[in-house]
Length: 114
Picture 1 (cartoon, helix red, strand yellow):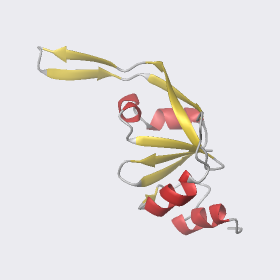
Picture 2 (tube, rainbow, N blue to C red; picture 1 turned 90 degrees about the horizontal axis):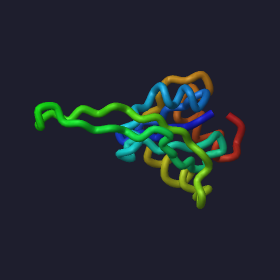
Picture 3 (spheres, rainbow, N blue to C red; picture 1 turned 90 degrees about the vertical axis):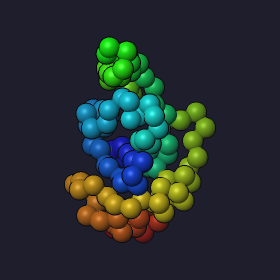
Picture 4 (tube, rainbow, N blue to C red; picture 1 turned 30 degrees about the horizontal axis):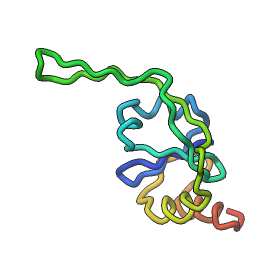
């Protein structure tokens, strides 16, 4: 399970890395519009295996060829970031099969059973 905290304060829950890769464009990930966390709430670092490529069409319109990314445990993860910041700031939860509501998600991370 991978959590993706979005720049619009939404939270997506992905079943796998492949699911996260399908749902998030490399340019958004590169721009920091998405932050990833593992199922324990520890931050994940993004690593690009293929960089985004930018070209200009007629010198005016920028075209971006989406890169490929993976995630790995952050070198210095802040184990409290997900609980103290993300769960406080999240505005909505995308539908998923694990959590029926934000309250259910918050309960899981508070140590109580959902």
